[in-house]
Length: 122
Image 1 (tube, rainbow, N blue to C red):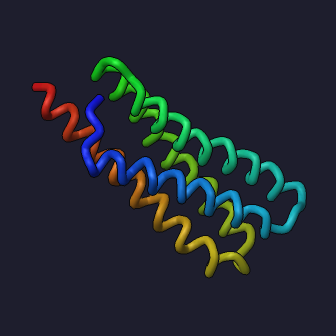
Image 2: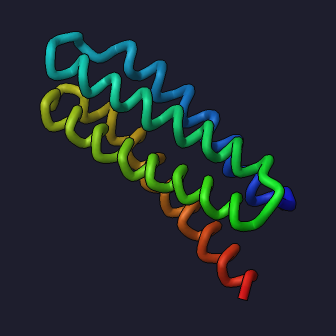
C-alpha cells in the first residue's frame, strides 16, 4: 500500500507507544492479578505494532484492511487491559492516564485510516 505521510506518522507513533508501554510496565508491582494483566498488555500492545508493520508490507488493499483492522482491535483490547490495571492499582492513575489517552488516539487514527481506505475503494 502507498506510504503517505499520515501512514508513516502512525507507524512511528505506534512504535513509540509500544516502547513507552513496555517501559511503564516495568514499574508495575508484581502480584498474581497484575502479572496476568501485564502479559495481556504486552501481547496486545506489541500486536498493534506487529500488525501495523505487516499492513505496511501488504500487496493488496484487502490484506491491508485486514491487518490494519487487527491492529485497531488490538489497540482497543490494550485499552481494556490498561483500564483494568488502573482500576486494580489506583496509585498508577497519574502514569496510566497518558498511556490510555495515547492508546485511544491510536485506535481513533487507525479507525480513520480504515474508513478512508474503504471510502477510496468505492
